[in-house]
Length: 241
Image (cartoon, rainbow, N blue to C red; front, side, top):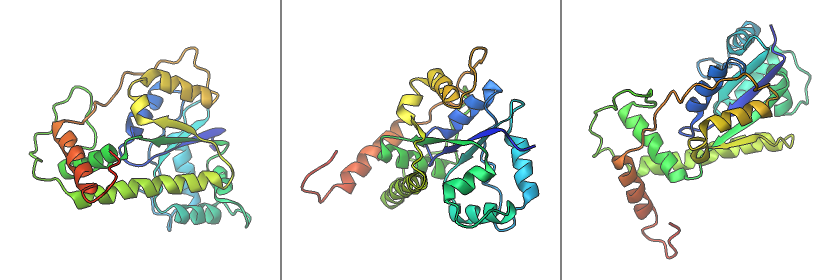
């Protein structure tokens, strides 16, 4: 069944999107906002796939949730246009809303993009993308895995992903609800309730589960942050940070 309302969490890596989707899922009233498109191929995506995603991501109150980072974005618009038999001339947000009805948008970001890039690289070299609350940290030695080039690339990649999201929003003057990672982790439950209010979901009897994930940052990550910012500005006359 087609959902009666939906929302998309737009994110780049290491902005707390997994922590947020677990929290929203725990309420039982905010859809199941997982990365439903990540494992799909837009070239072979069909109407049955859309219906299956609606079923998988919708809670009994008719709310559908999706978590999405701009990847093959224009290919997805073509897939939706094809499978939903949409008229020509629709903007990208209009096409998105045909696939995900009455869609609201949540934009996740992180103020400190250097720490974001370092966290992303750390996850890549350790394989530890998430740490379930209370579990033992990975023990892999990563002290020698620092890479200026990798962190510099990821810093630019996260910037361009956010630019892609902003370009999408601008097409129809969408004002998303912005969730800032640094604020979210300090105000976890309040943030979830504010999102439910934004989605017009009653919160009177809602319970938010405690954080499912622990923070991963450690002394090695912080040393990489300081090393990168020093190296990145080595030949600058005016040091920014």
